[in-house]
Image (tube, rainbow, N blue to C red; front, top):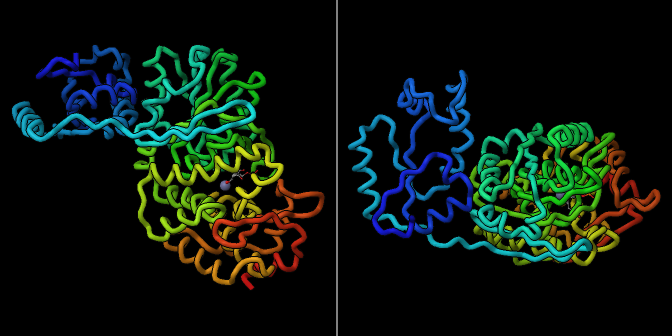
Length: 458
Ligand SMILES: O=C(O)C(=O)C[C@@H](O)[C@H](O)[C@H](O)COP(=O)(O)O
Ligand SMILES: [Zn+2]
């Protein structure tokens, strides 16, 4: 139909909800959202409640819910005309005026980063609207009979409807399971609740789990995928910068337990990772900063030029995500189970995890890692490994990115929390420390007193 010239197609509100349908239409036609507030929609509907999605007594609420669920997807359409307080003539005039200069959208650029893993290769898709390729890029899709989307209460209202619509567009039934947002929910209790709900709804080994959210959702949902019925495949759809550049790649999944970060978990590789950088438009600034801390970490481990991009303060998200992800991919391919070099990715985390715990999760993961990076640079300088100039350089950059560079925690309490670190060998803590930008090392045998001094800022 869209190949017929000069045709006007009026669609229902759900027709372009699936990212692939939206992309198909926007590349072939000028797609315009006729935008209206829920009050306007309700007033226009009047007594007409015979519409299929508005059955029942709760239809006022339903209009509000549908509006909320679809807002973010509609915002991704290329053209919008406001219709509140306008007559049909005025709206038609606005549409005609827009058509004079509008054109179909150019094809999107979706970057593909291949990853080798012990359980087979998978791909990371990166780019605005990459979710439109989610189904076509998934290997063995014919084995998937149902989808369980695990998300959290912050992300669900923004993106769950569109991601669900994408599976439905492929005739694959999809259920949405929403967990509370935040690190506090990253527990075995939440996992158990999900097992029960999946079982209750009849999900079996032909179910594909899709984790839609930040690092907590990806880690926890991935752990459910690793263990439910002894393991079902899963796709990571990270919505936060942190999850795009780090948590969604490499197969570390798990939960916190008994006051220790990520202490129960598994290695479970995803079947696909979809980093749709358009999601970053709805990400709160604190979450962007959180992700940037892990980007700084990756730059410090292996990419001096990436550090310069950050210092210059200029980048495009798809390019930045790809660059940061490639550092991680290169390392996890060499050492998927952290027997050696993968521990480098824990730069800043020996201090960071402990600070996160001691702060009662007042510090978010990326914020704790930022402080941890500064402490690691300080410790490296005390040990004579790194130049004294590294710490101030890092502090300048992290401050510029809006990240904390210190946290007032009791050094003894941080030391205690550090004893849960998974990199520990016997009683000995192992630190990942920078020699310079692009060069890190694993260091054991750091005297307790020196660590405490570093924590005191001395
Ligand atoms: O993937 C890794 O390996 C990392 O260390 C990346 C970290 O940024 C991430 O926070 C990871 O979950 C930490 O793992 P853990 O084993 O130290 O809990
Ligand atoms: Zn991390």
